[in-house]
Amino acid sequence: MTEPTKILLDEDEIPTHWYNVIADLPEPPPPVLHPGTHEPVGPDDLAPLFPMDLIMQEVSGDRFIEIPEEVREVYRIWRPSPLYRAHRLEKALGTPAKIYYKYEGVSPAGSHKPNTAVPQAFYNAKAGVKRLTTETGAGQWGSALSFACAQFGLQCEVWQVAASFQQKPYRRSMIEAWGATIHSSPSELTEAGRAILAQDPDSPGSLGIAISEAVEAAVQDEDTKYALGSVLNHVLLHQTVIGEEALKQFAKVDATPDVIVGCTGGGSNFAGLFFPFLREKLAGKMDPRIVAVEPSACPSLTKGEYRYDFGDTAGMTPLVKMHTLGHDFVPEPIHAGGLRYHGMAPLISHMYELGLFEATAINQTECFDQAVRFARSEGIIPAPEPTHAIAQTVREAMACKESGEEKVILTALCGHGHFDMAAYDAYFRGELTDFEYPEEKVREAMARVPVIAG
Image (cartoon, rainbow, N blue to C red; front, side, top):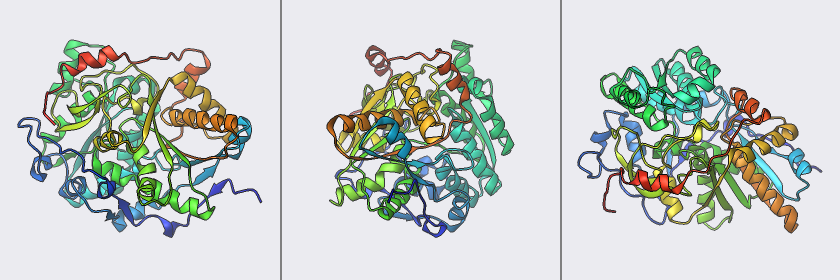
């Protein structure tokens, strides 16, 4: 009997707890430092930005953290998400590999981002916060937070990287449909934005700049907090519902992945998929090879340096130890807008240093080649971000074809590409170009990164 194409869970199988991988790591991650004193931050230092519930999750060492029922109730709109066996892609490739993808494009926002947007909005509303500010690249995080704020009666203000603001007008409309306000970043609304525009009136923007603007707006109003869509520990924590569900789904078909592949920008989608599987690996229950895939144009893991840096361009955020291209990094306007951040999540960076997974970088034309192949076989048009994971998945499957090995490959299709058709249009017209971020640019940027021991 052929294995089912779609592996589903019942609504009552939505995870009841998020998984905190820190509890199982052989070494704890380095501390977050105050941007002024360079001393480890405490909960009070983070209070201007986040409600205390999220701060305590950020610093928690508990293995499991209970998901509030109010959050699970919103999750039920789209969770559990399906796990697909890619029979048609396997046939198109002629590979003996078994390919699975966990599809997060079924959420209202069309990506994995509501997995953390919903709890962030819930905890802020619980704390009496009236408004959330945030940044967004491609618009997936901005739309997710707009949706989540609408569920809990919060105002939402979004600064979107200018290149994506111009490329993706319907993401803007989506954000406004959920009641949020959106600005192109850099903007004239903040000191950080005005400073960038004074230097470059045509700046394409960056996630670091947009973060600076959102943080500045948040700290100036006591009724406002800031929400981040990736990078921080509590964000990665919330995304583990992806991997927890996938574990249950693999159990239904009596399979175990040999290879796990995820795209990485800030790291939340990748973390959400592989953290629960890593728990099982560390416990000796399975032994998958784990691969992070990033754009060649923004290669923080594969070319960035592992050191303390600011999370934003203006230097307003705490200092975190991460693989970084430099906080003033301004990326090429590649179409994977969600993967254009200058740094990798500190927790992901720490785990990379521990050798718990490997990383590679791929150019966007190869990614779109395989995205089209995927769409024509599986039917789903991927967002530009997960095309990187798809391209690596195809590489892995073709290696199986050459070796004759029947490996099980798992990847995360973290969002659909329905709002990214301009990128596909550029691809079909031959207008996509590849860009390898030069190592000398990284060296130049490191001269402007704070020098901190440890």
